[in-house]
Amino acid sequence: MASADVPAPDAPQGTSRSPVRGWLSVLAVTLGIFSLMTSELLPVGLLTPIGAALDVSAGTTALMVTVPGLVAAAAAPLVTVATGRIDRRVVLTLLIGVVGAANLASAFATSFAVVLLARFLIGVSVGGFWSLAGGIALRLVPQRHVARATAVVFGGVETASVLGVPAGTLIGDLSGWRTAFAAVGVLGLMSLTCMIVVMPKLEPERVMTLGDLPRVFRTHGAVRAGITMTFLVITGHFTAYTFVRPLLQDDGVADGMIGVLLLAFGVAGVCGNFIAGVLITRRLRQTVYGIAVLLAAAMAALAVTGHGVLSAAVILIVWGLGYGAVPVTFQTWILNAAPTATEAASSLYVSAFNLSIALGAFLGGWAVDTVSTVSVLWTGGVLAVLVPPVIRRFNP
Image 1 (cartoon, rainbow, N blue to C red):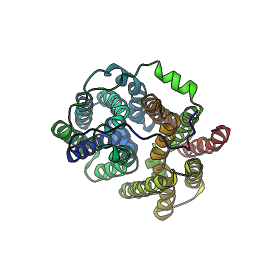
Image 2: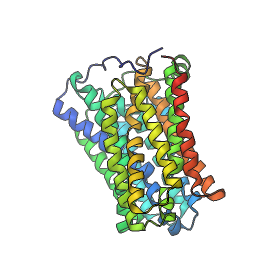
Image 3: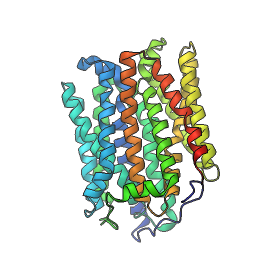
Image 4: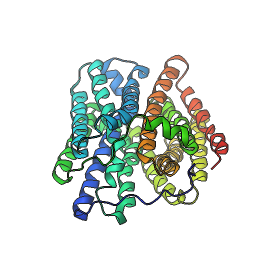
């Protein structure tokens, strides 16, 4: 069993093509994954106006997060296996083209059913693209640049999670939610164009089978621990964060300030990402502990504290620091846990991450509609505090 605290072996030899073209390709893939993940999470900051425009409740509107999360969880391994013999450039450009078109369809939709169909297609693209993106980075640049290129690609996931949603919310507040979806759709089409222009042909090197997934889960205890803590943290976060807008509104925060507060959350998240990037080299497990503490403390504070804009900003900054550290920390844990089966382990991680997004949004929607809005904070906090026992039970 590989310890999650032991660095993974060196990545395979990168491509011998032009380093400049390789880095341009990395940036194109990063833009694609940023637009994909922003697409998946964009409704978080726009639930209220979308629900009002399409005449559905907040809980029902949360299906815009649940549906792509569920679909992405299934699509991560299935797309990887189904396209195993196809040029990776072709697969990635097709997936990012679908997400661009789906977002534009959402921007012009006149019914919630059309929006949900578009969200289904986004889920397929998110699961397939993210599952393949890490491996693509390893083949685009020389070996000495592999680690940095991989960090840049996965930085697209992190930046979308902590910055894309606040930026989309600001656009929605200023120009309407349809404009926000259209902007992300155009961003996806820009990534499509960049990948067509700069990416080289990339034939698959190894074909993953569905049998690899249960095998890596069964034989690597650190993978099981990583999947469990991913489930707890991501489900808890999205149970609460999906409804951060109505939570802030209930506390008297004006609509015009919500986008600003979410932007503060995003900036804090970027800082959390860089801080975690420094810590995880030698203190990976302690970083996971810190994430759980920050998330639980922020959710509890938001639930019990009477606050205005200033106190809400402080709480969201703490929350952002904790969540911003999640993707890079958990991805590193998973890759280090199964260094000889990174593709299968990454597919499991992508599935767990997206399934947890869907479950969190669904659980939060149920709680909002049947209990109270503030109940999502307590639920999310409880799930976060369950992480330390999981880590303590893991024996490296």
